[in-house]
Length: 263
Image (cartoon, rainbow, N blue to C red; front, side, top):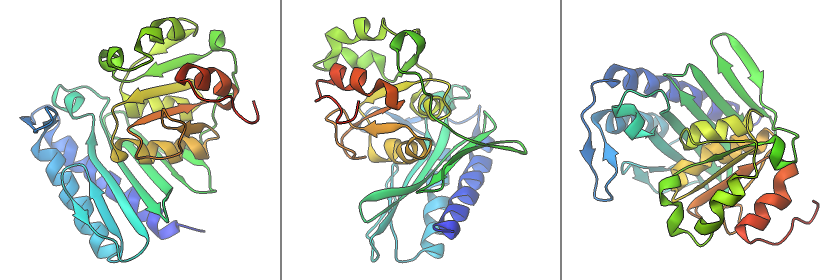
């Protein structure tokens, strides 16, 4: 099976990071990074563990981590690591944080893992092999929703507090008002709801590659569509639109993008 060794390593590292983070959960003291976001000893320790073990297992691969782990690639592959996605939730004792790990090969994200220790859920996908969720001893294949009408769909939006800064900000409330319901639980959790077919749309601006990579490939393997807000299938665009295929025309119209080729 393609990517078998890489996926097995990523799953084991996500679980190991979860064990570390749970040891800090509820007691971690945050520091403030230059960009104003929080970081804890748990973030740094998780990233050190993941980066060091990846370097041992795949010495030719590069690494890009949120907390500074960086190594150029001798291969055409790079691991992208978010040691704790949702640090604000982590330090406040919420269950919405997780670990994100992805592998980029020849410019494409080919596998991703999203582990939510406090939720007891681990999501993963590899290119061409579907997307899966493990809860306890139960493993379920993820399938994107078939809903196509906003009035029957659930929309998820991250960073609503920053929406007013965007060119579409003034239109956002009306757009979201066309949906059956709206959720804003936190980027990775929202995205996994869409991948699992429990919501139909996830939109979020202000993202980094480590926020996007794992979520995009898991959603893609579940049958969802994804791109940045400019319509590019890139994890480097600073945003993510992940949605059920039936909403393609609706989402693209809101973002000011051309209609899909095959609506």
